[in-house]
Every structure is written in structure tokens, then in C-alpha cells.
Length: 289
Image (cartoon, rainbow, N blue to C red; front, side):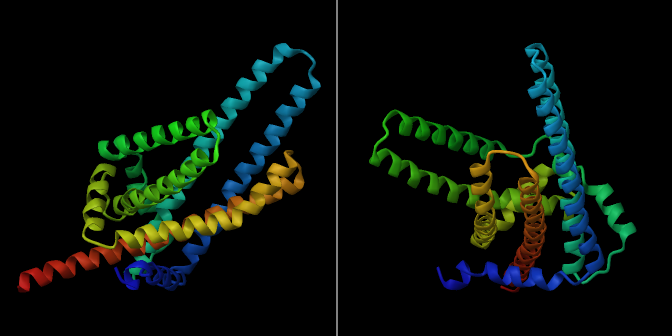
């Protein structure tokens, strides 16, 4: 394994930055709306949460607590659904614009809306994951739970050290195995295929090489997110309250994650086209032989 295999993802990031100016107005519009709409949603949820908590604290009648709790859960679920829809729509828009930009094609807003309308339901296919990936995820979840139970049952240096090492290995495995599922999102949108078909195509693409590049992309974006989000997490843990400062910090990190998600989707779109180009070149070389 040479350095080009390990650091080849840097070429993908470089090409991602190159396509940013292409269809720049649409990219800027997606970025602004992906900041604006979730921020409004987040602010509404925080205000509603403060309203519910104030009513619970001011109401001495405990009979109203279950009613407010049920209302809070219903609103939380509604906000989560709305956020997921917004997240998915902007993810689809990002991949479509990135695909057009990478192939050197111009895209107008009308064509973008048409592409979103045609493809946005694809990743919501019922059979989102293959049985093998589902079973492996279930096994990992069970193994992590057993490790946690073991640490709490026998809290000593050996069990804690073993649990930390095991957690790191699980994290690395998840990053490595999630390359296919992340790439399949791009495949389902660009090739207008169902989620199951996209998973199969993505699996074939990465099995022909460069899976390590996808792993390094995942690791890069996760590390950037962790480095910049950890300070905010420490602040929240220290304050343990909702005030204007925590709301502003929450909105900042919320928007930062949105920006990072846009860049990650653009990078995976570039990664997809590089994989497809490599596959075509290999097939041509085989025909020549």
C-alpha cells in the first residue's frame, strides 16, 4: 500500500473545491437555504420547548404533566420528520448540482427542481439496506452493548482499556463499511435507480478499488466535525440550561454541520464519477487485451 492509496482522497477534495464555482449561484442558494430553513426550525423548536417547560414549572397541578409531556413528544417527532425531509431535499439538490458541475454542464433552477422531483423519493425506498449490512450493524450494536455492560459490571483498567480499543475498532469498521451506503445515495440520484439497485452498484464500484479513499473521506469529515463541535458540547454540558448564548452556539454548530454535509455530498459525487471513470478505463483495457 503506497501513499497515493492513503492520501488519494486529497485529490477528491481538491476536485470538490474546483467544482464549487461552477453553477455557483445554485450552490450558494442551496447553502443559504440549508442554513436558513433548519435554523428557523431549530429556533421554533427551542421557543416551543421553553414555552412547554415554563407551563410545566408554573403549573402546580401534576395532572397536566402527562399532557404536556405527550405534546412535547409529538412536537419533537413532527420537527424531526420535517428536518429529515428538508435534509433529504437539500441532499438531493446538492448531488444533482455537483453532478452537473463535475461533468461541465450548466444547470438552471427549473432543471434542478425537475431533477429533485424525479429523484427525491429514491433513497426513501423501503428496502434501504441489504440483509448482510443490517445483520452486521445489529451484531455490532449487540457487541457494543455487551462491552458497556462488561465495563459497568467489572470496572477495572483491563476492561476499560479493552472497551476503548474495541470502540475504536468498531468506529473504524463503521467508517469503512459506510462507504457503500454513502456512495449509494449519490448513485440513486445520479443514475435514477432504486435504493436497493444503488447499493448493489455502489458495492460493485468500490469493490473494484478505491474503497480506502472513501474511508479516508469519512474519517476526514468526522474528524473536522468532532474537532469543531467538541468545544460547543463542553459548553452545553457545563451550562445545562437553555439561554440566548446556548441557542446561538447551537445554531452555529447546526449550520456548520449543514455546510459540512454539503461538502461531504459534493466530495462523494466527485468520488462516484472517479470510480465510474476508473471502471470504464479498466473495461477498455480488457477489450484491448
